[in-house]
Amino acid sequence: MTKRSGRALIALCAIGLSTDAVIRGQSTNGVRSAEVQTIGVPGASNSTPSLAASGQIVSAVWTAAKDGRSNVYIAMSGDGGATFSVPTRVNDQDGDAGATNEQPPRVVISASGRQRAVTVLWSKRDTGSTRTRTDIIRMARSTDGGRTFSPARITHESAFTGARGWQSLTVAPDGSLHAVWLDGRHAEQKIADTAKHTGMEHKGQPPQEVYHGTLLPDGRMTETLIASDVCFCCKTAAAVDARGTVYAAWRHIFPGSMRDIAFAKSSDGGRHFSPLVRVSEDKWEINGCPEDGPSIAVDQSGTVHIVWATVISEGEPQKAIFYSTSRDGKAFAPRARIPTTGNTTPGHPQLVLTTDGAAAIVFDEVVGGVRRVSLARKPRDGAFQSPEILSGAASASFPVIVRAGAADLLVAWTSRSTGPSPDPSQISLKRLAAGR
Image 1: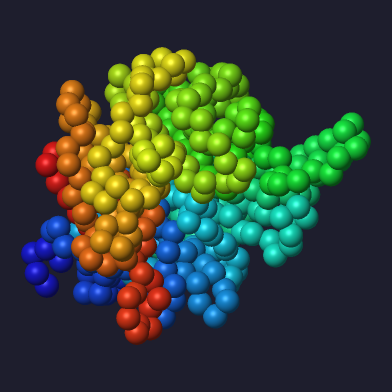
Image 2: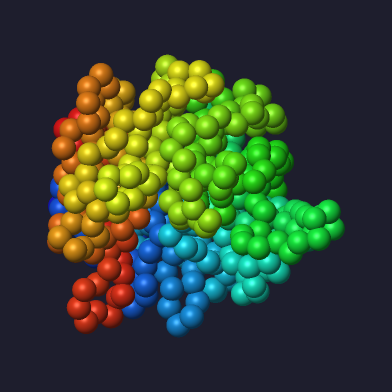
């Protein structure tokens, strides 16, 4: 056994993974230095990754679809993403999962005393029509380092109808878990009320609301309505600062069908939220969903950082990615455009802050006719640097990023096979120096 594999073995055994998992995980799924490596379920379409980290411990979750069934899988690392265990299925019932690129499974690592838990949240979509289907959100928890999980539980009342999902998940310093999601439980009643009062049939997307929930140890949530009339099909974002203040962001429908980013915060642990704030008056007018939600992070001073995609007019309308900050959560600084390489339909940005207050933002964009994953960095008191392409020439999309320890960043995305392959898509990962 090499010196590196020995360190990986000690680290992964410390979070409860078996020796066999460590050795096989390193030999087949290892991520070393700055090389792009892959993990996934053989023969399946692997996509929709999410990452979580607690120091050097990293969880990677994603969905794998095969033979018409979709499941959630997890791989664990004890060395900041240098090596990973072999994938483990999270959901106990085969096929009991569903995901879209804007509805990836979410994962957090939390600690209570000396015990560390891994919690995964995912959605399961019904096969009914948009107006009649009933979607559910499930969760499962592991207390042995991601090796085994509790049976999946529904996190809301099982009688609720309507579409729901586009969930985000974060953990507070006290170990409490906070989720934000879109919910259509009142859609049917609102459509009926509109028809009764106007005599007109409802057209377009069903009414949707955004909720916050504190996830209890038994899997249930205590819920709070944040806002109504939100944009359907864009993922939400959630964060908690060192004081326990909860932050939420989503795409809202403003008057005139303007699909701009909204923000709200709670100073009492999620029991009550402030009135929503419009982050930027982008005035993206569209009678539909952009399917491109925001990402937020909070630094040690309590400053909120947010990134999002919108449409701008430069000759012809085109997408662009923007960044802003707020010191009080009541108003945001004028938006700053994030530089891209291809300047062609960039989107799906995700944000992380480094220990020195710098921002690192990953996104996908079309370069040379191929969608690729890029990274843009912003020093704490400086302008954005020119982006770097992380994914090479391969087709890549929907990246996520996490800080693994103090010195490293870990980025994951979905890679599509360009030629004959038994694996239609895999999860690619790349480690980077946080301060570069």
